[in-house]
Length: 155
Image 1 (cartoon, rainbow, N blue to C red):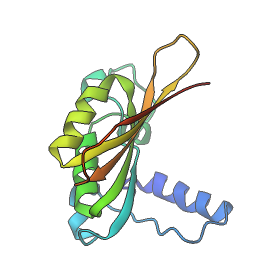
Image 2 (cartoon, rainbow, N blue to C red; image 1 turned 120 degrees about the vertical axis):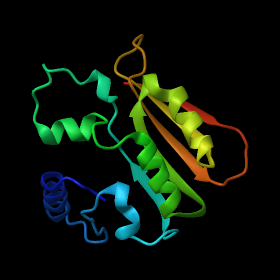
Image 3 (cartoon, one colour; image 1 turned 90 degrees about the vertical axis):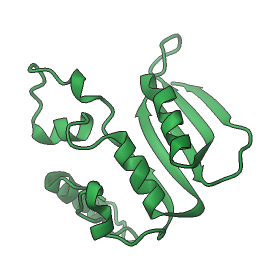
């Protein structure tokens, strides 16, 4: 699901160039997902929401509207993506989320709020000795509580 037409067209082009035929992209605003898709239809949801809060957007950010909407929470927030994942997923299925590391605690609390159980966490480091800048979280909707597996990779 993509809601920006230029990025949707880029997605279509990338799928074609890579010979991917088993993916059906959808141009839809996730805030109105119920108009585009029925609930509980997905076995997995992958999400890369805007990383940065609106307040980090400054007048000096002159990268264009598409970039700003994709990277800053100006129209949607990561919570919208978690809400949509809950709407789309069948019970006990997996939600994969990529996010800015400084927001880890906020994201984990939100996942629990929406009945996701975090199962795996991957912290990504830009260099040895530097703090993590991005993380990937794997959660299960309505899953049993258990051990959270944390993987550390440095590259």
